[in-house]
Length: 47
Image (cartoon, rainbow, N blue to C red; front, side):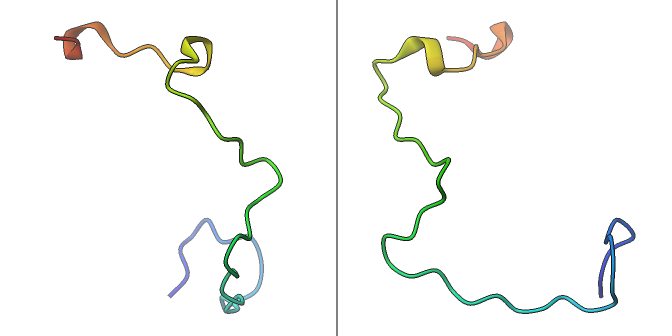
């Protein structure tokens, strides 16, 4: 069954499984030392 937000058609077409090493172009490796790329944690959840 397809949800109400489905844009077109009545069926979901099965896609081929990804192959090993197949990453999207926009997949960037992040380093934990890069503090500018991290999202701030909501203050009540900091300890």
